[in-house]
Length: 255
Image 1 (spheres, one colour):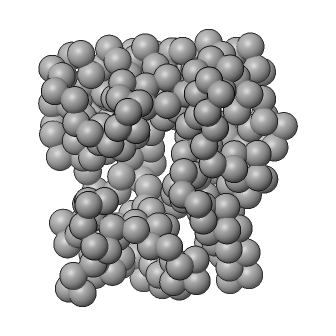
Image 2: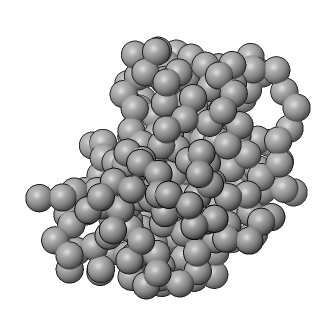
C-alpha cells in the first residue's frame, strides 16, 4: 500500500485581504502549512485557519517566512543566521500560542518561499532554523524540500525530518525548484501534474525542466500551493487521481 501526505500553504491573507480558497482546500488536504505573521497571516487569520483545520481533522504545521508581505516572502532579505533563527522562533511561537486557543497542535515547521530556498543550500541558515525548531516546545518535526541542507541540519539537531516534493513546480537537475521567473517554474495542468506524480511514486524519479535525466527524490508529502487561481482544482484532481490509483492519503505526522 502506497501512502503519501497532501499539504498546502494556507492562512496567507491578513486584515481584510484574503488569499486562496482555504475552507475548501482544508476539505482536500491532509496537512496545512499555516502562515504565521511573516510573509502573510495575522492573529485572526491564523486563529480562523487553525479552527477550520481542527474541524476538518487536518494536521497543522507552521509556515514561517521573511517579514516581507510586499514580496510575499519570495525575496531574500539580508539577515545573519542568528537573526533568521530568532525570526523563525517568534513566528512559530506565535502560531503555537494561537493553536492553544484554537484547540489545535502545531506538529511541524515548513519554511516558506525564499527562506526555504535559501535554507536548501546554505548550511548556516539551515542550522539556525533547525536550532530554533529544536529549542521550541512541542516536539516539532521539520518538513523540508527533498535533498537539501535543511534536512541534514534538522537531523543533526535530532529532529524528525520529512521530505517534500511539489505537485505544481518544475525541478532543476540539482533537485532545486525552477525559479518562478523562469519558464517551466509552474505546472498549471492538473492532469499533467497527476501523471508526473504517479510516475514518481512508482519510480522515485522526478523529471527535470530541461529534459535531462530524471533525479531521485524522497517524498513523504506532496505540496500544492494554495495561492494560485487553480489551486483548489489542482488539489481536488490530485486527490481523486491518487486515490483512484490506490494511493492512501494520510498525514506524514499526527496532528
